[in-house]
Image (cartoon, rainbow, N blue to C red; front, side, top):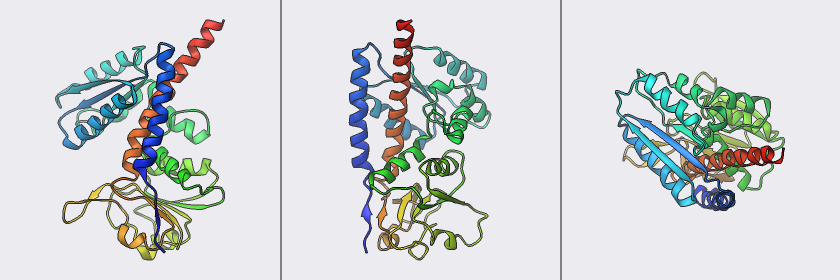
Length: 291
């Protein structure tokens, strides 16, 4: 058996086309979805990610504002900029690129973002909404994973899903999203005894620990769906995930490649969340006008 590829690039193009259509509808109503991206410092990887986000906004017709600050920026100044963007009617989504310099409390900054503009899905209010199954913004990377799983046509109801990783940004929200789709979920992590025993029972595996070859072929049940969130480098410097792709693809039923799997979906779901935020503003304006 050779697994079918879950093409994140192809799905991303479909979803971005839908974002562009929704954006056009909003523009006809006088509302241009706007995303503000703040980056502090000179971290090379962060600047690459931010560039992709700004470029994606332009391609889909969204308005974007990129604010770049030196690593010496004071925490109070950053918080002041976030507060200003919170009340800016032209901005519907705010993203503060992580990591931040050590002297800035990232948690404090994220919590300063208005929940209605938290398109990254990192605010406690967003996490609480996910936990309770109420409307809110889903964290972009696990949200993208859900879309990739849905693209296979597999019904997650009753499936056993194993999430490897328990980070606040991917592992934990991934588990909650799978629960919302009625999967039975096991969360594994660095303290899990006998990881292989868990993964061999899984119909769906999401690997999100940031360590290459975490999941190998002997750990996968034949026909399982494997989503690789990892972004690592092998000994030759080539981009790779957490999954031993060459081995696992001969056992799994479906698998995401790295690159070209989860990566493009993260930026795409940011666009989806931003357009949704603008649609909420448009809906509220309609309600107010109707009173």
